[in-house]
Image (tube, rainbow, N blue to C red):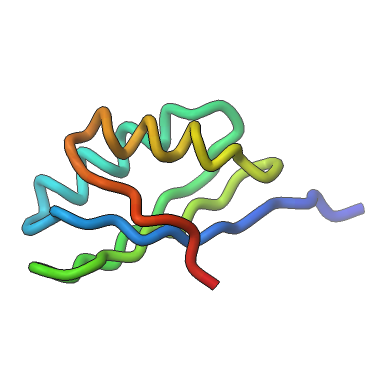
Length: 78
């Protein structure tokens, strides 16, 4: 039987460099059930953060983690 995972994509603004990527990745990775965090940096625009987790995460939890890193979650992406 294969394990089920959930993958969600979010827009994040305010990120400009590799340090930003590391900060967001570190905070979101600390959430319970997160297996992987991939960040596509768009300097001066909306970066894409893809989160793979054991189960869907509450958007509020992801928003709080991104906020703790110092950036703004614009919301889920399709």
